[in-house]
Each structure stands twice: as C-alpha cells, then as structure tokens.
Length: 311
Image 1 (cartoon, rainbow, N blue to C red):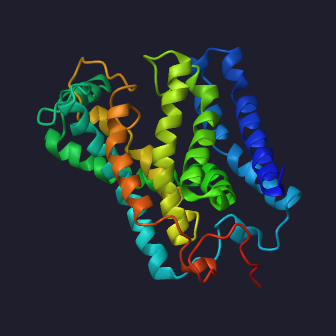
Image 2: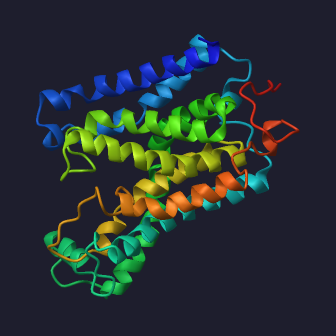
C-alpha cells in the first residue's frame, strides 16, 4: 500500500471513528429527541478538522501545514473573492432548483404562490397575524440565508478542513472523477451516526438514508470541491457549506401545508434534487474545471498532491 493511500485510510478512520464516539450519547439516550442533540451535532462537525490536523501536525507533518489544508495563501485576492461570491450563490441556486424539478416530477408538494407551509410554521411559532406580507417574509429568508451562512462558517470549516481541505487534494492523484466519488462516499458515510437515527431522511429506513446521503454528498461535494480547487483555498468550500446548511429551510418555505415531504425523493437530499447538480458536475468535469487555481504554484495547472512549501 502506497503512503498516500495509507494516509487516506488513517484520516478516514480518525474522522469516522470520532464521529461515532461523539454521537454515541444519542444512541444511548433519546436519539434525535435527546436534549443534547444540538451540541452533539455541532461537535461532530469538528471531527473532520481534528482528523485533518492530526494528519498534518502528527502523522505526515508537511513543511507547509496551512497551505496543505488550503487555509493559506489568500491570493490572488480577486480570484478568491470571485469564488467566495459563487460560494454564497451556487448552493442556494441548487437548493432552489431542486424544488420546481421535484414539483414537476410529482415528488415535491409545492406551493410557490401561497407559501402555505411557511404560513403554518409562522402560525405555530405563535406569531398570530403576520407583521408583514407573506411575500416580504419570504424575501427576508434570503437575507437570513446570508446571515446564516456567515454564522455557519466556523462549524462548516470544521468539516471542510477535512473533506475538501485535506482529503480531496490527497485523492486528486487518482483522477478527478475518482476523487469526487471517493471523497463523497467518505463524507456521506461519516453522516451515518445521525442518519441511522433518522436524521435528514426520517421516512426512510436507516440503510436507505445512508445510501441517499452518500449520493447527495458525491454531487454536492463535487461542487464544493470545484470551489476549493479552482480557488486553491478551503475558504470558499467552507462558505458554500455554511450557505448550503443555511438555505436548507427553503424546502419548507415553498411547500404546501399538510403534505409530507419524503426527502428520499424530493429536495436537494432526494434523487429529484440531484438532477441539476449532476448536470453541473458533468459540465465541470467535461470542461476540466477540477484543477488547482493559480495560487497553488503548479505551472501546468494540474493538481499536485504535494504542494511546495511556503516561506
């Protein structure tokens, strides 16, 4: 076994092992209804970062530690800024695109004009008569996504330091398609401690939920990976991850009240929501977009598994 593959196995074992360790109290308690769920889920998001830092500082110990994780350098600034803007917009676009596609295929119960599910949520929150027109409140959700993306940046970085900061570059020598698929499989499997409890796919048996999560993580992870590679920085991937989490609630904003949403079939989590991301990833692969950006210091533009040290 070559050293690169051994390092990938070490990272996978540490990140997934820690995830199970952190989530174990939920399995011993009340699962998703455990009062500790929020704290446990947040702590679990930092386990990939712990694994990546362990690889960089204790196992591999490369000379350019921060660069090997994509934390530095933050240049060229203009290019980095462009991918940060894409990180704020592309995840929202993919999440929103999944809804009309699902509605057209008959698997997403949409209410794009009356916003009846959103009204029901506001009523359940005890707001009574709405302080603003429902259309204004819907528009304000986009502002909330921007705020949520920034709030989510730190925990999202906890994941992205591992998945796109460390793991994806390690897999790139085996080819971009393999890197996308394998990193997505590992990322999706890492979610198993929560998905098997019913998280994300509450209407599906646990095994099917894990399978669906892997599929979603391959496609969405490819988009995050594109941002990471082309910017030569982990920050756009982390911001995209934070934006993705913040925008997930749009599936309820545009849904019909009283109709269950089976996430196996609908929203970005379900197969109908994978159609647009799949088309985007196909275009990115076909146009050879999975290459390191100019900050990587590789003149050929191809990703190097061993970035040169910085002073």
